[in-house]
View 1 (cartoon, one colour):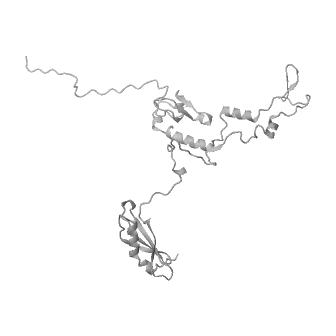
View 2 (cartoon, helix red, strand yellow; view 1 turned 30 degrees about the vertical axis):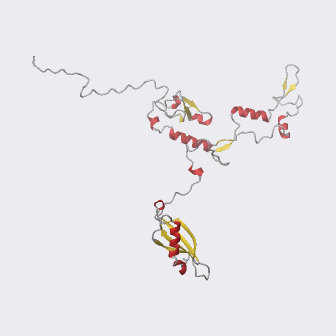
View 3 (cartoon, rainbow, N blue to C red; view 1 turned 90 degrees about the vertical axis):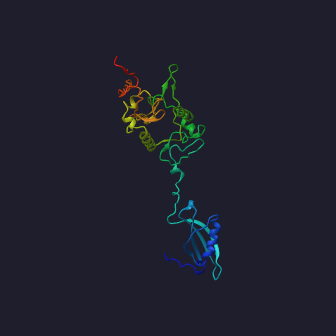
Length: 292
């Protein structure tokens, strides 16, 4: 890229640029003149040192310009710009990447992306037709009974009194949804395999077998009476500590974690007996002043 040659009249307007920098830098004053660069035809930016301690390495930039065939140079703008060795803030990072565990406070909302890989769709019944729709009625209404001699085994039952065939009704969609609510399955999304793996790695890092507490424990949590197992697939590896004296009380712990508060740690260590003092200050020594 070809470098522009600064316009002569604009490059000579150093005093005009300094006056503008002094006005913008009030109550301080700009420092030494650092040079000028050509931004465009008949547009030049002059640079001055900035002595503000909060902007170390920055510089005042004053841009001047003149119209075509004009001899008068006018002021364009005055700004404070960072220099080559200036102190700059870190590059902006989106809030979703800045968020750390423990940052969520009362009243804060943390929305999740629709395509969050940590979650996957769960059973909600929303993909089923409404209970009062025609399609739902077709699914819930039992099919006509076949002839008695051609009925398939297990589809027709005879009553004990009349001997008339009886068909078990298909449960309605609303009833299925109620059962799903009772079992805790009617959630829009649940943890995916990736979400479970990330949670397990995070929990195991804090309360896992590699911690110093677990390595010095008398036994693991899998044999501890204070360990409350989790539900689902995580039950095989994790539980919740219910010992109020444990450092992991109320936390999710790995089953191969352990601490000194194990329920079966019946043998208490004996207290360490201190060594005998070199100078016993609790005993009175009798001193004889005379031989008799």
